[in-house]
Image (cartoon, rainbow over all chains, first blue to last red; front, side):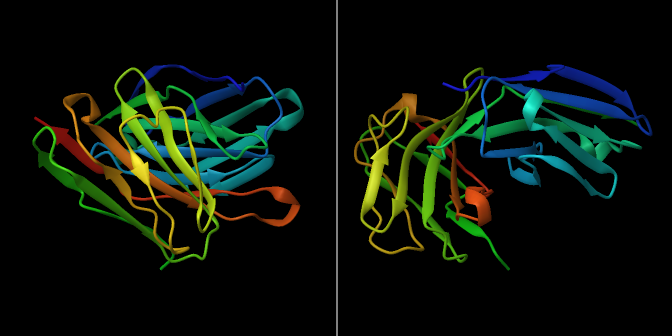
Length: 108
Length: 115
């Protein structure tokens, strides 16, 4: 089955810093999404991005499907960005395969 | 507002007492699924449904039941809960999009504790 690896596993930033999170996947996919899980456990859908580049405020994402990776950029980080960021992909059977996440702590 | 609604958000129950976690979506999505999230194990699929009256097992179906009598609802049933079913549960839905690509919408989660 498809394997998903995220890096780094943990990240600590000072407020205002920029960061890049990476997601590698082992096979071609029909779906790739980035989620933010907040400290209350809610999964917030950040981007649906099987290919190309998207931006939403301080966040942007790029997926290079032919090279099987995706990047999530966080600029000017804020304490509210803290939490766990997940990459999830799906192949033809539509089942989401999840990475283990990047745990981000943004300090004031 | 397009959303997936799960209830309850929090639930503490005792071993063996049947319970149902409800999930409803208002987007007319065909596909719905349930996941559980456990520390160190990530999110794992329990059951999924491709459409009304069509359900199938995911990776960890033991101890769970589902039904899909209506397109919008996909309840998760624990007939006899056990402590190893203590977890954070998520319901999700999606629809096919042009080119066969699709995105998932998740509910807010149900934190279940079985004592």
